[in-house]
Length: 191
Image (cartoon, rainbow, N blue to C red; front, side, top):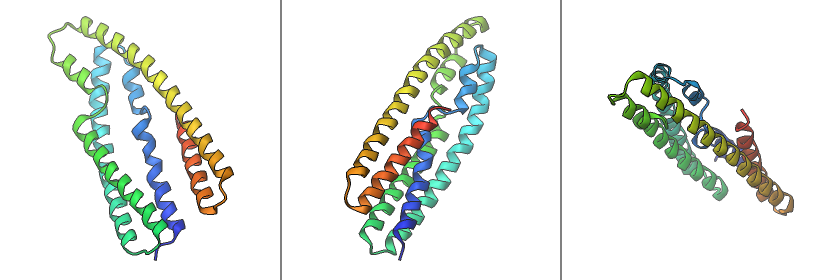
């Protein structure tokens, strides 16, 4: 029989990588800082290698989480543990899907990069286009980063408030866990 503490640990382990689903990747920082075609081209080639590694890592970890959660849910009769492990299974499958997408489609810049790579523009025209595009992207991503940070802070505060008002200890702990996860995600946007 699997304990609720172990099931809760599995969920926390599953939730930690979720920040990368929503967060602007630090790996993209190198791409955004290049303002000429040659630098952008080189950074995109390096990013492709990283994304393949990251994609396979998500596939492997998602598969392990899914299998482990499935086995755990088959071995417990506790409804709460089954629910938590069911959530973990779903997150594992989502991790596999995310990994496949990373391998197949790369990062947010791939479409722009491929279109620019296959044009007949001169290098100076490509440089100008890369510079303008990345300036726009930097501004847009900063707004998105701030918005997501604030959203996680608000959700964390709401969960903390719910935990403080809850009488049931299990529900109180669950809301506290959700608050902690959201505060951790909000903190991740400051880096």
